[in-house]
Image 1: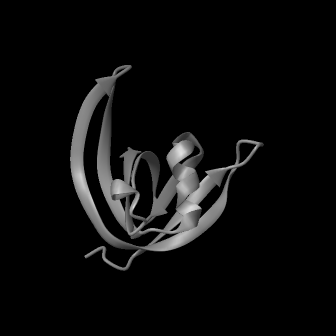
Image 2: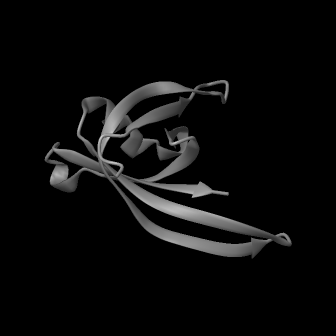
Length: 101
């Protein structure tokens, strides 16, 4: 079970390098979709996971600049593609992420 796992949130700095932005425990991780496709004569798979975490002010930056954030979880890098602070209640945040591999 993923509940309580730590995820590391990374931010791309001005030099284009990834650096640690913070760590947070997940409330729930839910695999939402897996796909496979062929691109440039090779098979590409993608997995989508939604990470539910407790809201924290530091997370708000992700909503407006998702391209500069990613998640490291269980040794896999996940690109953040969605941010949902339900009705802006600041209770939980769902971070939708995708991993290619």
